[in-house]
Image 1 (tube, one colour):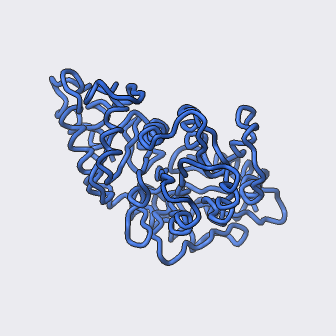
Image 2 (image 1 turned 135 degrees about the vertical axis):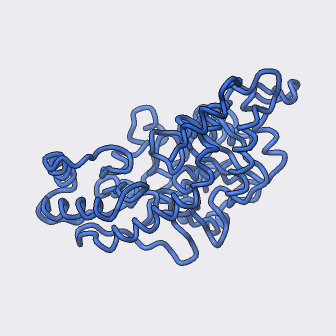
Length: 367
């Protein structure tokens, strides 16, 4: 849903960086940030170069540094975890609830021996975390950093994801993987004036105030990326509602061997992806996944690409990756999600009900 003609016209003859001679970025960046902040219901949005960069900048703004501990879900993408290491801290992996989100009860256990400086809550697949329960088990002064990359537009008790913690982070890059995308990019949101100011410094060499006592670098977003993002903001409500409606249609048709837990009544999930538990009797989860792809290819139905993809979700826990094994904790529910999950991305714009029917028909044939 990118209006390339508009983007090209707006940038003709202009500096597509936007950072020469000023410390705040160009006009398109300012407008994009303002629209994004308004959408999330916060006072400040700070655009950066990527989703992982947004988490790193947020952690550093919260004062996370060498030797600190940061709690993070065991079942997540490495982009939620690597920024902890980059900040000099150590991840504390926390088990999952039935939605794949951070378990408040396991968080309470995990932090008994590890005094965490911050908690990263990942709203997996667009389902908001149990934010109040997480708040209840952490100590006063512990920062809550939301990774809301899957949850643009999702709500918890009437408030948008990203606005629920001390600071929120979004990935808005990727080739159609996110609801809106800038090619590569991230966004930080917060209503805390001091945190916002630190983020602006950290992303731009400290150029707002060069004499700061914390490390700054270059995590800037260009005018080109900002204009691409800005062009999609008027369509964001439509894109979110589309994926919710089509997800509901897909859920009604879902075969009995795939089940998705219903989100609690106090949240609005944007159904970014559908995370299913596989319970087929004839085929293993892995065999079902590979045979489905083969069957779709045989029918010449495009698959294996963003917005037309069926995958096994996170194929391993980050703590199973060699580098991160030294931080491993027992996280049984998260481990079971790796073994039995099927993620469906076949309902987001511009997918139609007819295309969804093709997928469901092929699933039933394979099973």
